[in-house]
Length: 160
Ligand SMILES: [Zn+2]
Picture (cartoon, rainbow, N blue to C red):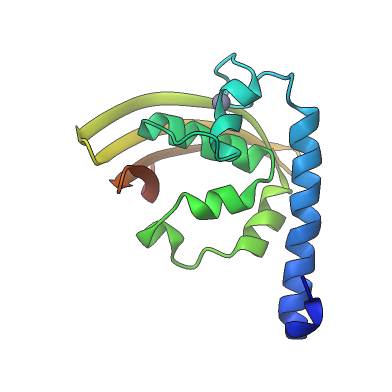
């Protein structure tokens, strides 16, 4: 990639992302033998890692929800961006999301409830436990997922 082709803003942005992609890959590789961060008790590569590495598509909203949580926890923000559409994507900023993700330690995911309205519309209510600046917090949300051409996307969420 020739960075000279981009304006200075784009240059900074792309260099930044490139560096972090490398970091993520290294972090991911060092986590291969570890249990998945979503709390499934499976190995990372047999769980969310398969979706994050694009080896498999999530079959259910819950699988996508879990993999997005794990992606946040491991700073795979590109996966986050690639699995959201519509309202959820409005105003989403890859660089800002990455900076934000790195200020938070995601500790635990609790799936409270999942439901399917039909084959292409589903909901997941969850509690994501985190620590930010030494303060424990819980993100309690009901997320909406749409399946478009066979692929699930996060499209909206309501904080509960
Ligand atoms: Zn997982």
